[in-house]
Amino acid sequence: MAGIRELLTLFISWKLLLLVVACASPGPGYDTSTQILFDQYSRSSNSWLARTIEHVVLRLTRWDGIYFASSSTRGHVNEQDWAFSWVLAKITSAVSRVFLSPLPLTPIVKNALAGVIISHVSHLIAVLLLFNLTFNLIPAKQGTKGRIAFTTACLHIVSPAGLFLSSPYGESTLALFNFMGMLCYVYAVQYRHKDRATAEAAIWTIAAGASFGIATTARSNGLLSGTIFAWDAILAILRPSRNLSSAKGVINFAATIAAGLLVAVGFAAPQCVAYLEYCTGGNTRPWCTKLPPSIYTWVQDHYWQVGLFKYWTSNNLPLILQAAPMLVILLYTSEVALFRPESMLPSTALDRAGVTSEETKVFRHVLPRLALPQLVLAGLAATSFHVQIINRISSGYPVWYMVLAVAVNTTQETVRKETVQQDTAKSADTRENTKDGQEKAAMLFNGKEMQWEVRVMVMYAIIQGGLYASFLPPA
Image 1 (cartoon, rainbow, N blue to C red):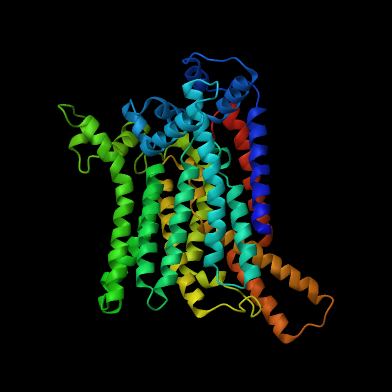
Image 2: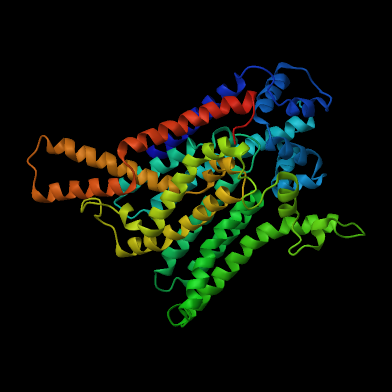
């Protein structure tokens, strides 16, 4: 519980710091779109409370946040609105009506405020879920697991996504349900390694699929988490004698297929709503006759020029360079998790005390699968997206946090042991354990590199907060 309290303290302190940076930023903002939008609604009150809330919300509602707030207030009216979550807009609108109606604010400010509240609550829950996900996955003694889980959650709090996790965006909600789905998947795999727990494994697998499906309704990149189930399904088909020769194997396979379908439904359902609105009753649009008839892929291509190598121009070179450090981290940590997961296992006999073979098997099974969506995301961002958004959409993927957290813990443990050895006689076993720790730390990240990585993350998020509120969002 002490770790949770410290996480809550860090979370609140960090959010307040970013809020102060945003609110203290000078001027009305380079992009005055938010102010123009807010001015379209007649104020019902000019009290200090209304003015204060509107000032804060104004600073947090920029760029895509304008679309989220507008869609929440009046629904998806324009075709390009469908690039942003239809489901999240409905939820934000409901929160505004149910909980914020007594406030002396205009409808647009209420809906933007509802989006801010949802982002904060989602981010906090995501932090706690990531702590539990890491704690349940890393095979180590309780103290080591707790330290790694705590560090992982802290890294998510100070993520380069920064103020985007406080604003009316979908990143926090994606992180919440993506982490929830991965935690459910860990539970499912744990039950698969137990006798007579087939039903529990199937239930948790389907719960993981449902969570990823909800994540996909918040942001389309949640769809990438379906690759976890694709991996399991393909492996089962390629090895039928091993995976489909028993009732347990067939049930696990059926649950995996069902989970994958739930992820697909999370993406397809809003597209169906748009199809009924734009492509029936004598109406038509160019995308209505495409296969599949997806309004999302259409507006991304038609209005935002998203597509393979379309962003590779000399004008976008500064944005590509801005995204490069995060792309390197995502690619490197994905490689570690996919091909060298043993480098993240405890390096000493003391750290391995109490770790069962089932825990290690679950870890080796789950970690590479969790890394696959992250790897695909990095590849798509580098080749097809507006690449700079990787600094914020990477916040919903846990593996890079975990790898960095293990590197931090391994480096700290190595330093601690070296300090102790200066005052005590060194046995052969102790020297060997320290050597193992140094080798494992070197396989991940150099300690000084790791310290600078965290410093840059914090500095970037703070600078980003000022730019977000007064100039233009940097991602």
